[in-house]
Image (cartoon, rainbow, N blue to C red):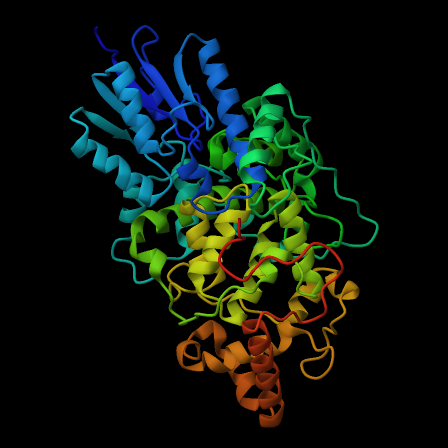
Length: 534
């Protein structure tokens, strides 16, 4: 029996019809392979909503391909004989279809790329790994950008991307408005009386309901609430979410993108990162659409530029860092931080209003915006001295948009400063004052954000100054930390000693599994560790 032409593997974060490995597809003799495998769903305890989003989106995408006449070989998680791994499913598909060649698209994780390279050597078939051109910048282009530079900084890369792709430029090639970056205009707290738009959600169809039942059976022990489930699971739905943002969120996104508020989980954010990162939305089209809103006068420049910077700038930049520095990057720990991640990252019972709000939201939604991740959960992990690998494990597990190429540089570089300043020029450490300025969380907290020692002192305050003191040798020479260390030098010795004693007591209590405040009534806590137990 003759075999097929080409077997084309599509991964769960490659749900794009124009994907490189789908180009040139011959409907008469090629097969597209897609597989739900436990290896990918369970190598960290992914949030049930994330698993449901990806499995449902994969099934919908496979159905859309099949509807155009493509032969799709789709392996469900509970299918008889499912090997549980991408490697096993590819080999089983080769046995079924006897292809003449394999075509793949460059993956989003180093470990998967290593697997693909092994296939090239082991399968006895031609295996082509095509460039993932859904991004603005290839890894090779980023290497060329990085070559010879003593420091890698977002700002210079971002300007290069703007020029290369002609985004938000005047006819003579200068930045719109006369400057490249309007971040200083994007730091307002949410005023009372301003109501953000509701998030667009979708009722599960029969495909999604089947997936929810599967996830409920197989992954209910993972951190996070499976239902209610309202994610987009098709490209059309994802585009509807984006259009909703353009109409109702973009104009105010710039002013309030750094704000936080009790009960306001998405504010004016687009909440499209899960769809960009799995392929349901095209990043290039998104950038052009936001630019068009500015040029049509429907969005101010600080909003359009701030949003575009997140995608054309930051998203591409962290991907470049990832592929430039892996695999050693994952082992970086410049600040020599080794404390286990506190149990309350899984339970949401820290007693601190801001942390419990963000972790609780993360449990419910598998989503938190960038300031919640950086300046609440991330800031605390940094000043506490948590092990960067444990922190990266948590972020990868709990967010629907988390894939290693984007999550790891954000955690090791931006959150934990574990790369020694390669990605960011300073640690993003802050006391409770920052959170109080950018949110209303402190008004609802049993800790007093104005106190650094004594009963009711905010842990962010004494942990911040302990962090600054214990890392003096590593950070005092950083020009962006100069003012902080001048303040430390002028600080009363007894005051600093008292704050460091508070920090030492806090560390001891966490090591013993204690909580800062008695837990509320409810289900028992999860045990201390890197992941919630089965």
